[in-house]
Length: 131
Image (cartoon, rainbow, N blue to C red; front, side, top):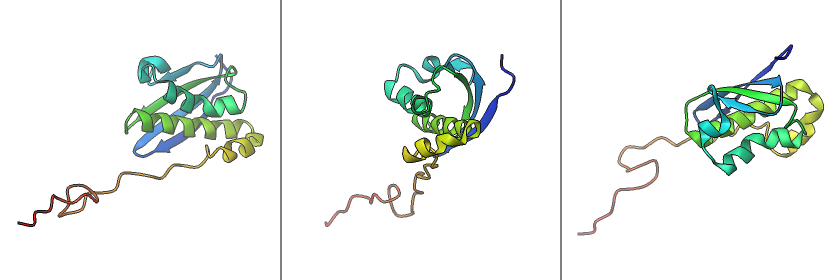
């Protein structure tokens, strides 16, 4: 298909996505399925994943092959976005200013806070009864 493929890893919460960019027609395959088969018809996730490609005008130039594990669908989409951004940076360093300005190269480090003892969740308390 192509002489070389660019690989990068993206992360979000507990999701990890290994992204391969290959010369192609702009198709996205996630875990062997097409984008719509894997994520369903979610326009917000589609916009999120294609954002780095759209900003760098590479939407029609590369096929994206992704192996993703962990997290939920939104976290996986965020990990794919991060991975695509990092792979594009390997292709051309000039994309750094555009991608950095949009915050696509920064790993979103927010994760779920652990549950504390004596609490219902991390911060929520049990119902207080005065009598």
